[in-house]
View 1 (cartoon, rainbow, N blue to C red):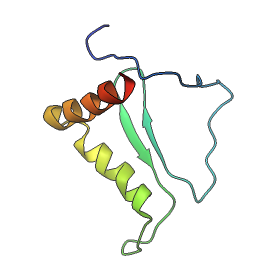
View 2 (view 1 turned 120 degrees about the horizontal axis):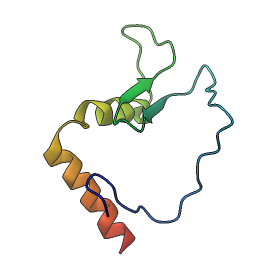
View 3 (view 1 turned 180 degrees about the vertical axis):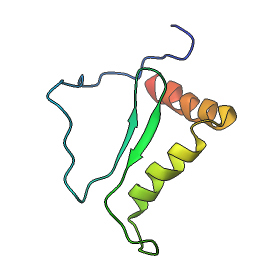
Length: 81
């Protein structure tokens, strides 16, 4: 295993058909250069958002916290064993 990479079990590979989100969908996007972005619906400034959308934002905000990332990756290791 290379540094910064791990196996995460059996998953379907991404097909390069282009990515399209519906106006009500959110996505957390990582690229091959470790770039990170979140795409959200057009929420109003004080609008309540679904918990899973807030979770995507929280992951984005914590993604550069090495200790937190290590803890999350250990969860994958435990689940995969």
